[in-house]
Amino acid sequence: MPRPQKSRKIHYPPMFNEFKPMGVGGRMLEKIVMTIDEYEALRLADYLGYSQEEAADEMEISRPTFTRLIESARKKVAEMLVQGKKLVISGGNIEFRANIIKCLSCGRLYRVPFDEKIDNCPSCGSDRLINFAYVGGGHRHGKRWK
Image 1 (cartoon, rainbow, N blue to C red):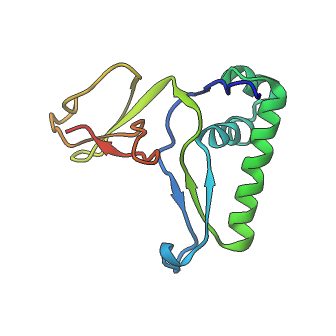
Image 2 (image 1 turned 120 degrees about the vertical axis):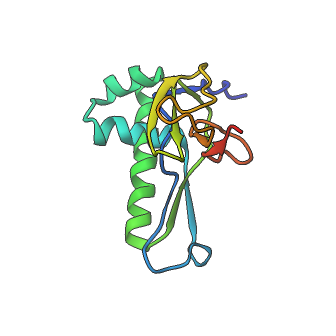
Image 3 (image 1 turned 30 degrees about the vertical axis):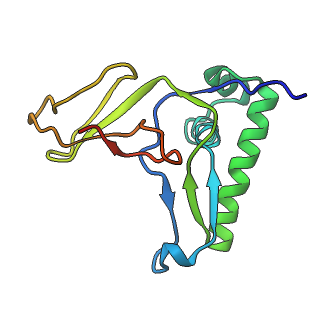
């Protein structure tokens, strides 16, 4: 019987969760799903330039586990680019450390501790907010709080 998978620590939720070639309807494309922990591995290693050991420590996973995540993420990005597939970032056994809230009225973004809830935009007072860390209904991002 395999060991239960530890949750992977993710700094912030991804702000964008779907990518596709221009000029082709999304329904026409084959979909590739990248988990949020694979996204975080890609962000840490390739975007921020962390070593695999540093990135594994940041996500609180072993280095071999990190290696499997980054290899899988890179393969999915390559497949999307070469074959023109739609990439969807969704799912995974994850735990966010912090959250991003966006005001739909003024466009401002707020990075807040995960347990902090904002009901109104601190800048304009609007209640039209998107919570990027909402993970539900198939692990979609962007659920409005109100």
